[in-house]
Length: 230
Image 1: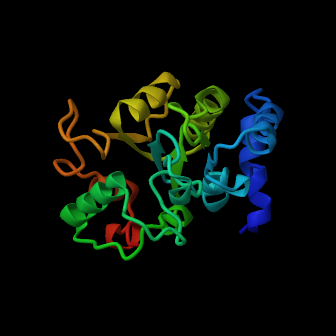
Image 2 (image 1 turned 30 degrees about the vertical axis):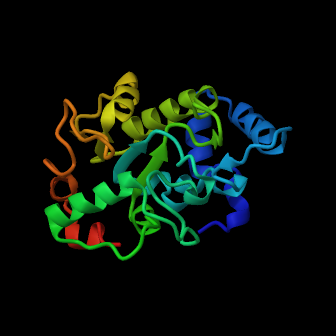
């Protein structure tokens, strides 16, 4: 596994696959130099540039079995460390609402009671916890979507074309819309759609009404009580 010092760049497997699409990663790295090294007093989420690509380092391309798409890092930088919906071990505050509802769905679906809010064990088992925007400047109404949307679309396209039997867990309009904007033609993948964890009422079933964890594991042939344990 790469050391934390390596996280400031995409790992080689992901970088090679994304670059093969014709996308120029240099523009992302230049944007990050500006975001983290440019003028301004607002903190950035995640606070360390070395955390921006954490999801890709913990989940090598060949190991991806599940894709969970978040919108952007938590707006409170202390809650963000480069994994969608996850909080770092250093965060000791109140659990984010989205994460609490994800855990509620785990209890209903599998009877699991997570012992930590850091989702790194999922990432290390092949769950790509990908935010569409990998950075968000605190105080800004919007995350840095112009920097990241095309990059994220290329990543999703790579997964569709190169991997087999991937479960796509799409929660909310934002995740569903970006996944649907990418031509996904791999018939061996399966998509599970829900409302966003924050949603109370929504046009899609909530995680509480239709939790996807057991169904995804059944599709993948994994033991859900091991695969989703934290």
